[in-house]
Image (cartoon, rainbow, N blue to C red):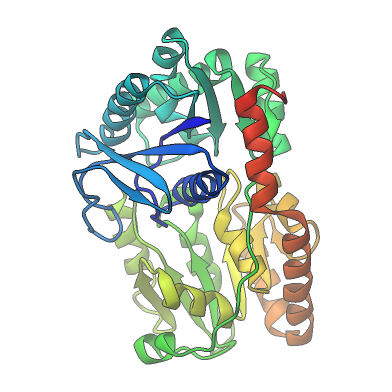
Length: 374
């Protein structure tokens, strides 16, 4: 089968969950003998600054095609998805798989060209605080195109499935993200760079954007009676002002460390040695960082939104969304009960590895491509 992937920034990047999903699907489908092309944005990676390259290449058996991108806030996704769609139509694949709502705006062009289209909605992106009114309207256009024009619609949670049914009368298929077992690593590089040891810190790992609520975590942690550190790992995404406000908020607390964007061994070490992982988000699709933290055996704490609570399935702790006092209460309880925190981590690992499997995700996605499942 000839497959096109559109909507990610860069194949192989860990900048966001969409990039991880596209990379995992693409390389696994290519290994099964399918002809997969990923249409990358041109320019530099937002987090690392590394150039994506300007010519076609093959990585992991996947064809990588950079497409024209207007590298300005609000225009990058719009322009790259349009030019990617034009390029994909020219390549005549059997299916074009769009990822995320905004990139789905040009999906009807592919439909009119007679190409089967599939859309995965990773979250209701128009709700995110970083987008202004016009950008939110544009993203909502992509959502509508996916709901009304795509031949196959994939969502990551039952909550999203219910949303598309009630809002558009559209039937979506729930295919959650996958995860692989991880090998814990001792604190080596993170000890050298930031002075971190096993169980000496609480970890936040994600983009520094308003809806992720790192500010809420900093507030709760500032009142937490502990010698542990708080590690804020991640970079901004069109939100440098928000990142600056977080740093200012934490300036008086020497226990708070901002690492910036991390990947590779330092990332694995941060997961492996955290006392607890906290995701205080108000809005999520299906957070891959939560799946990864669970796969490392982290004791996990999230807001009580369904997209996170359903993943935890009782193998972690939740607090009332947006309530710093309740988050403080939960963290205090965990710090005072290390054996309980350890048991939660083991339960999280067992649950996530028995429930979320990439091979199953690939198999079910290919069924959608073939029209065998609805």
